[in-house]
Length: 172
Image (cartoon, rainbow, N blue to C red; front, side, top):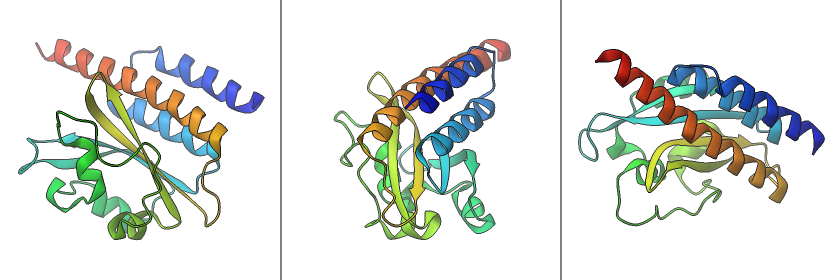
C-alpha cells in the first residue's frame, strides 16, 4: 500500500508539468503497470469522427508485442469490439462495467493475452481514453488495485484534458 501511495505521489508530480498527451500516457501506463502487477498495458484515445470514421490512437503502451502495437495503432472503431463502446459518445454510460474483465472479447484477448481489464478515463460524461491492462492468468487486480486504478484514471483524464487544451491554445 505504501508503495502505491509513493507511485501516486510520483505520478501527481509528473503530471503537474506541462506535458504532451503522449507524455501523460506513458507516465500513466508506467504507473498503472507497476502499481498493479499487470503484464502489459495500453492507453488508447479516439481519433477521427465517431462512430463510422473513427479510429483508435495508441497513445502509450508497455510490454505489448510488436503485432499488438501495429494492430492497435489506427484500429477502426468499427472493428474494436468492447473498446468501441468505451469511446463512442453515448447519452448513457458505456455498457461494459468499469474494470469488467474483457477476456470474452476475442480481439482484446488476442491483442493483450492473459486477462485484460479496462478502465475508462472520463471527463464529465465523455470518455477521453481507455486504459487496458492485461494480467497473467489468475492475476486479475484485487479491490485495492482497482481503487488504485480509479485514482490513476482520474488523474490521467484530467492531465489528458489539460494537454489537449494546451495543444489547442498553442495552435491558435
